[in-house]
Length: 128
Image (cartoon, rainbow, N blue to C red; front, side):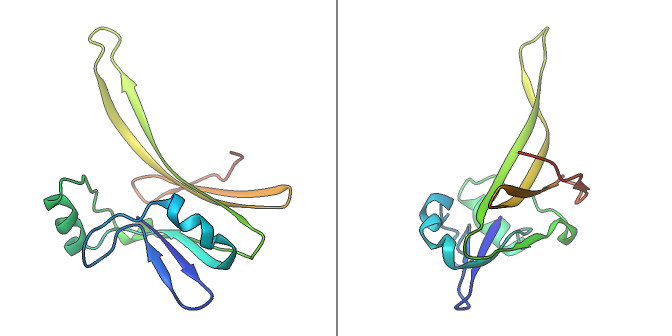
């Protein structure tokens, strides 16, 4: 899950730890100029259980999956989750292969992007 942190000490997580309610990224974007850090973080076991009882599929990944990036006021965040799928030609069924967590920022004409796989390995940064 992602967590956005701000200069005034506030942090907005993707999922509220007490209720499990999801905060959509679109609802956080108004606060982006005040954001100082954004990151992907693993679910705690208790939050994962709470979300699973609500029917939300959660993967409990190791703490090595933590990926953070600091931001300045003019930075534009890039945060995405992408799923690699393989489709069987003979049977037409798809199956999920792997999920990638993408975190980056645009600063002027430059972009810095990191990709993390499900094993907690950082992939080579590259363009979007």
